[in-house]
Length: 390
Image (tube, rainbow, N blue to C red; front, side, top):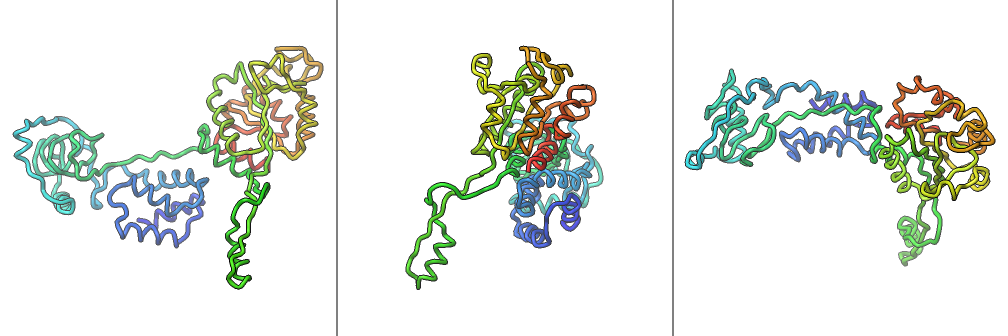
């Protein structure tokens, strides 16, 4: 079983080795987990996956391997779904409950269950022995027993089960799904470039040990500066109008970026960047920043990310006076050209589904101006955008 699972992980291009497979087998032999698919999932991910950016691939591989489970598997015997279908529910008085006795320890329960499964040939309901429903048997669903094995029941009813054995459905994760905070964080981390800067206020353990050894054992403490992410990021956010439905997603991206990047600057624009941008939407008409000043202030090494749906009238991009809010002396196309010419790495993230881009002329227009560096705000899209920014 685990060999096939291992090759499924390899099929999904996960970097797993035989050493990790043996570690997983060793953990199972020591019964770190037993008879619980959820706990096996957690254990396998801990042992086999060393890079959190591979979690989504692991989930897809896990789902692929286990998606054939349409029935519950107990001791290599599959229980038909109808054996556990709820049709009646027995209600016992307190006196009747007290007369029922537990079979014993968990090991005794499981041994008995294994024996019953070898003998059972059909569905049972309302009984006290077989795996069934609505009875007093220690095995099954929707009944009562002071200590049994609950199988195939949705949720607990009496909190009496010594063990729960159930089917779990793991859904494939699509790289077309909208981004969440963790996905964003994993993708943005690919932009990190660390360097040591500032005062030397951290212990350099490796150099301290080496220097002490070279100093005949006399302690020689070495210090080093803290490592910082030196990547500089400049973000431009389209706000208002057609961007309103995407506020929550864009806010997540903004919050994650602020956490990941020490050198982050941002500005707002509406529909298309023109001669000015702003940093406070409540003062957008009175406190603007000239875009020429932005170009002069921020060097070519800044990684520039535009976030917007690029949905507008084409004239808003191509003509002077095309802005819906003011008279712009020069077209949005001219300003986008200046930005993409000044900065070495520029991308545009679009929250609209990629398959819908073809229906909006302005999206294709902006995409061309960005030298095709427009990407959807999905897991795969953000990863592609980060590659383009490197």
